[in-house]
Image (cartoon, rainbow, N blue to C red):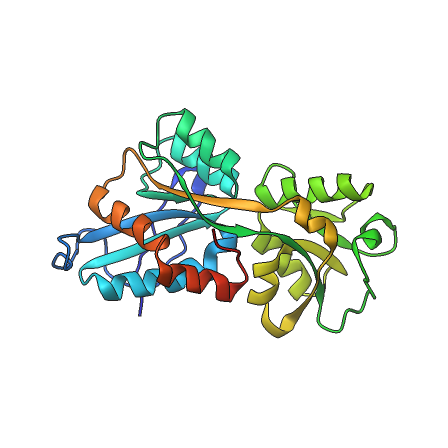
Length: 258
């Protein structure tokens, strides 16, 4: 089982973690001479896939622990720029990665490891009788969208412009997982989330594909950070995220892979 721990980062956001040892209790180095904790800041839409990859990575490297901070890529980029300790950044959009690059926080060229696209999410049974993107332009359905500054919100704005729709969301949430929660709880009739989030929602949500989503495909770049406390483990984790084994995990979750 993947072990990790809670770490406090800038802006009061806490890393998503499972019970385990603290950062000062690192075990022996792994087979490639790496050990200790690798702290990964990753887009919220990567929660399920990166958690699985972390488990596998730890199994392959005894003595290494993977700690995650999942959230909106825009917020994570700002935390890194402000000095939050992190080893790896995986963003849901190149724009937010570029913000970190421009501030000198990345030394290696970021690599695209996955792609994602939006899908309409509705509660199980589709009580709002949503049929497509045009319903987001109507006043009756209750809808949820991501905040406009986060990658899923930027993608949503693009598809609405392509479709000529001016939505009036009942709520905007900080990241895509918060939007998905609104659907799971039945608090809205429909939302725009990533295709991968619909799959992660299991039987609680249903997905409706729409053609305009092809106009707003998000590239996901990853890079080790310049001020990584654990450079060796950071480089190894980034390499693993780009491996064939990781690609299979992403594809199963609904991502497109380069």
